[in-house]
Image (cartoon, rainbow, N blue to C red; front, side):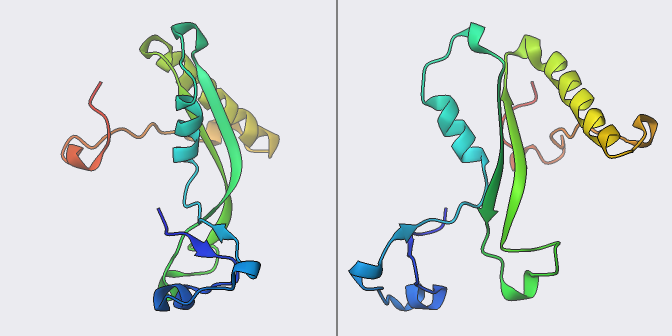
Length: 139
């Protein structure tokens, strides 16, 4: 996570240890992704097996500190609004939830005039050669 900054403070000010006057100061944090916040919502209350699946989605604005040379038009930007979703479900619900998501994706594409047969959806899994780069296990 990024360190707190003061409103009106530049990155250079922060690195130099310069403070904004307390009257003008308000702390804020950059939000680089939505995932941790969805997990915090999930963890906020105990769950029963009957509560699943839990589906959370958000069109949230996120900010990432990209170095100047890495910025390139719309492919690498510092701030953008990202649609993000997370499904927490039991093992016996995974297949149904995946099918439901694929149907939703196809519905959205069809709404924009794409034909179902022209859309390909892939499920990305852990690379068995590089499992150390991924969270979780092979289940």
